[in-house]
Image (cartoon, rainbow, N blue to C red):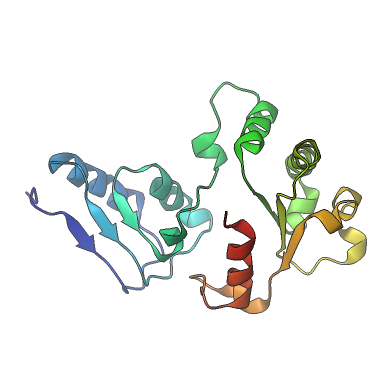
Length: 193
């Protein structure tokens, strides 16, 4: 029915994520309008990234609906395994292929990161690529308070060649990144071309 709708503004509505039902309806709406360029504005909402919102976060990166979020204004591209890995290809090969085409590689180091064999493999492959390219491209974000003795030696060996950012309670607990916060400013400066 809404064939002339072009922009749907849901700004400042305390929305954490959209349900699968809601995203499916937005997809249907986008296919009914011509040309298919529905713009969904979600600025000012406390969008969260957690297990419950995973479908919504993945949808943002795969939909043809033009989703306008504060977080996407910087125009960075993000590789997600669910979206960007090629089905049927070995996971290890997918990791290497993504690393090869990445300008910067960001590791969010948490206690669970330290326990993951795949995270350690990704770190090893990124280190190798960094040395092959002879350029500083790794960014490490220390999410949890990790004692020095728990930081992997493979990370300590390259400590002088990486950008390391530590989060504080404010950055860890923010629903929407505050662009004026020093942590987010430093991350943007480390990532920008």
